[in-house]
Length: 334
Image (cartoon, rainbow, N blue to C red):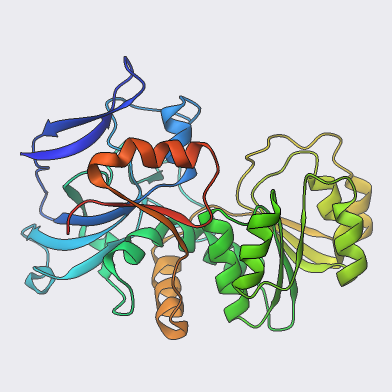
């Protein structure tokens, strides 16, 4: 038996329950979890604001641990190995976009907020030796999403001026980390002076508070526009992004946390010949390349806080309040 945090429709609250340890198939592995991390999707699922929610759900898409059991078709070399989990499932054959069967670990399949997690063997990779279990449990979804947006979709190059919106979240900070390693000058928008100061201490080149009226004019005056913008918000500010992108520039969109864009200025988009491209998570090749990039540049995710397994509900409370600067980690076992 094992302990796991379970979300049931009738309660809409995470409950620590005792479940059967997952049974693995011939091509699967069983991982004794060391650390997991929260993502915004976990909060949306708890609020019932995520598509096709299936109950009961064991959430958690990020995780690191040790392979304890393997299926009949899995190499014995994996037994006892320290691993990280690639959270994309059933991407499909088209590298440009996910299939209709695509899903993310942690609903509908059992996720990482449990003492044990079963995944296909193709979804495990060696833990980077320069990372602790907490750091390794924090980076997979955020860095995969950021890598695809920054490298694959936006093609950030050395010398580019890049704007990351909403700095403080895990993906935004990962995008900053990757873009800076590529040799770009990286700026950010955020909701508070405190987060902007922390961004500067990490090596950011500048930024603005997006709740102020003329933030776009201020950054335009300081930079003369951006070659690339990485956005997760959408909403009314999106039209401002098209205004501060240089002609021929790119806006890569990986989320819409603020919502729809009112009165999108199409004239500006075609006249400036902007490229607006969507991005979400990534396939196995993206994960493998991202992991190699992390190992080469010795990248480390920013950790906001670490909660014990028993205090997982408090971790969700912090995530829901958008107070964090970096990843919120749950340490499942020592």
